[in-house]
Length: 448
Image 1 (cartoon, helix red, strand yellow):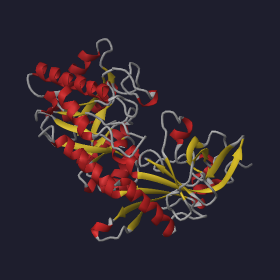
Image 2: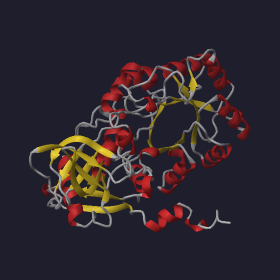
Image 3: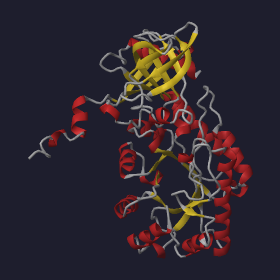
Image 4: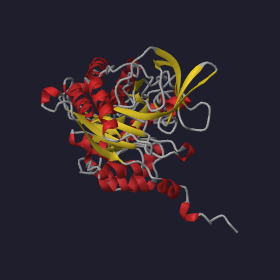
């Protein structure tokens, strides 16, 4: 079980010196769990369609080159949204043909680079399509050419979920062409008919906090648009639909729910013609692939009491869990308590705050959380943090980025005796690197 592997890894991390006074925060990635999620994703869609499917991992969820290389080895591509993310995907060996570029603000230079490399591009708006016309004027004459695929992002304007910041299909979302805006549908149809090289449509309704039925209705809306375009054209002008990602994650337990298979079956029910083998598909899942397989460890530096409430002061806070600190109701995280040896801590549950090191009062990972009473030297494990947490750090107080270690845990039945092997995914940031990033080479730049 994942929880057993996690306990093994925490104990081994302490035993092998991965958490020290000098490096009091460390992040762990369960590589076996990541591989299992990649397999579950591929099998879920293979069960509902015979058409080709490119599963492009959303790099923003874990911009770490070894993670991208691992997923590439499992048959996944990459969805990138900036020059930096494209560079990471290339460094990981992800081929251009298995890379998709999305972003609402691509520059002409970014578009030119993507087309030159052979990266698929999803245009965000009609102005961007006009820019693509100018960048590649020869494309229109040869729809069967080997040029990179180009799509157009459509906003079905179906509404949002429980987290407004992650709801991308609202009436006024900054993403895509609003399908319900006056005259927009006709403009989209004409844009495709005028461009033989425009062969894809792209949809993404949002992610965490978006109910699955809403996501499925968004996919249905773009499928119906594709069918309309193809009917007007008299042939299959749209041959591929990028359905985005966004599968929510359960942060309340170790259960992987909703599952990829449940979502794929729902999509098949909602938009059956999209899965009959006639359309190619692209997915862009991120959080759902990685979140459950990451754990942040931190030493408890002090244990104090204020106003009658115990407070465990740790080294993990806003710098690794910005979303949880600033919006704890939307982004709650589970926390497990371990002793100084890395063994699960026992004892009666006591409501206590788990505080981070940053210099503001709200830097809390949990408030009044029932846990065995923590003491200096104990260790907390912050669960479900494999996506958008330690891989996307926040530089408050110039706190260093923690080391990230991948691990494999062999069960005793496999002959490994429960042994855990760690590999470095990213080393801890050094203080001289913080100084360099903060203009250290230009210390006298503002002096007279």
